[in-house]
Length: 414
Image (cartoon, rainbow, N blue to C red; front, side, top):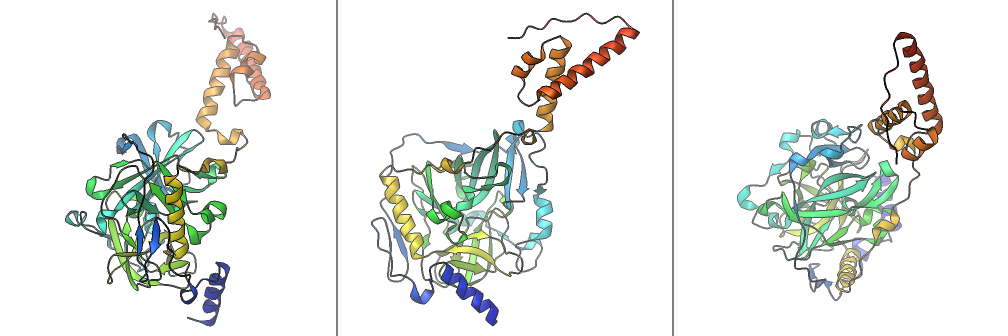
């Protein structure tokens, strides 16, 4: 490591509270989450509300178009077919186009050799039996987009994932917005069917300023699921693997590589990933299936490493506080972050405006007053409607010279 890189590493650690492995806090001991002397974490006591019936999600690929790549979030999404105007996917890449760039393929191999599909017989064994596919629904401009990601069980009722899966900046509405629905499906139980998360909590530092060092969220479910993974703090596993759903793939894949720990905040790793891996556990290979971090980002320009949030004492404290709030029925309202965006014509699709133009022309052709028409339209301005009337009047004059005007059909307007 050269001197410049070493200085940058030290500055990063100082900016995030001066945490380093040698100066990390003593093991956190909470009511619901506690750290042992060797760094292993125990999570207990999730009570929450009693729900006899809970929503089950069934993914029917025939109902959705996609997946497409959101270039701003570097994440894959689907669009409901009955809501897809064609403009929803403008500027978006397909999986095939994205994979040609291999942006987070560290070892330089082709996409076909960068990941190993997990064999069906291994899906019922740890750590694979704890990992699942996440589908997050976002409602923007009265349309539904469904994003793909990864999560893993840390308790029979809790799934850990990257916070940006459930709360992030959305370019098309110029706002940080929360997911309206989140579903988790275990591969071993058919990843097209999964329960809905009733409540989720994201780390306060991510909520306040999208701090990448705290890109962590916890999803709570009303029923129990087996085979949880064990978190471990202050553990520098050199050989790690990442398990998840690269490219939003429907089948679970894994990749292996080396990890580096610059400070207590993040883990850098040379494991192949792609969009869809966000929220995947970073797991030690040789010293037991301990989770040392959560994958959150692909490599940035000038970097050779993909990134993740390291399991640290502040994360264990966040887990404890979230369980406490959940048990007490304190549920955060993340919709408060949504900005009310001014309505402009540019927000509307060409198809919607064309429909309104045709309606206005029909009303004008039946001699409906412009002021009355303005009560019916939402997009067109009065000047635009007036121009449409002038166009109709000119056509009438031309037609009057060629043939008798057709009999008008009366239209009642309420």
